Image 1 (tube, helix red, strand yellow):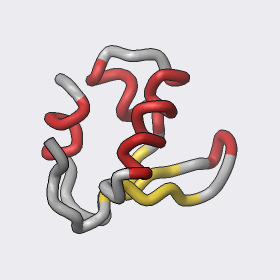
Image 2 (image 1 turned 30 degrees about the horizontal axis):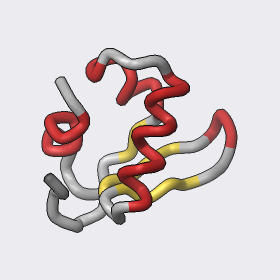
Image 3 (image 1 turned 90 degrees about the vertical axis):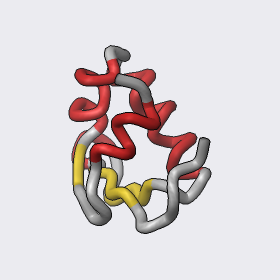
Amino acid sequence: MGKQEFLRSLTSDHNFKADDYAKPVGVSVRQARRDLGELEDLGLLERIGKGPATIYRRTGRADHD
């Protein structure tokens, strides 16, 4: 599963942690944070909190291919 597939599997307002992304996509948690940061920059995710307590939420914005 890649970034886009993971994103498409989420419903809007679905909360998840970097580890929840890392496992199905097959990347380290460190790489997951980088990937999620890129998706946040594109406006596809919203980051809530900081450090280990950080969660991400999918925004209502359409997928970016």
